[in-house]
Length: 258
Image (cartoon, rainbow, N blue to C red; front, side, top):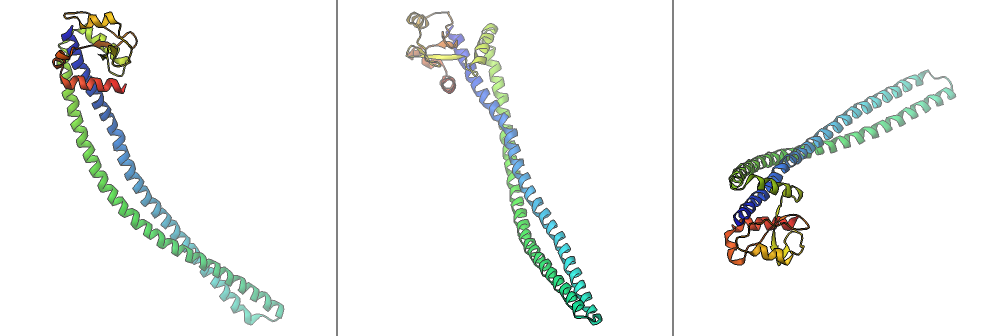
């Protein structure tokens, strides 16, 4: 049974690493999407600035036309002055001229505002286009780095899958099924080390006679935690070296996390 437990620990170590690798792989679409979102936002800023500039140019043309139309009316009214025969008619015509000139002033003020806005949008366009070029360059670098990193993780996944297959080949099929049912309930961690006569995962004390049986040389029984149902293992200090340190460390770390 000690050999089976050692192989199960190796399997758990591989599975812990596999879960980590799969989680890292699952993060790449989101990270790539975030890079694309930054690029889309930069492009959107350029488009918005250009659209605002275009609207300003349309308004400028409208106000320029207003100015010309009101100036035309002023010229027309002044041309009619020589034809006026009464003071009342003259005053009325002067009033029309005054109103038209006021409209000219208003239109010219609006035109000036649009000219100022146009200059501001020119600056915004130049700034946003510069930012876009920078974001495009950084996004290309980010995507290349992410794709390269993902390729490395995919290779690591392939290697771990192969390692898992080798470990599984050393474990009886019914024990694999038992291990996987427990692991499914506990975030991939089916085994727990007994520390200070307690389950290293949930902390429940191990019954003294059970602990003694676990320590008995040649015991063929598989022990489980009465509370969390994980498979328990215990190696006497002198026998600790029989379990690869990396495997036990990875398993223990994952148990502490969950």
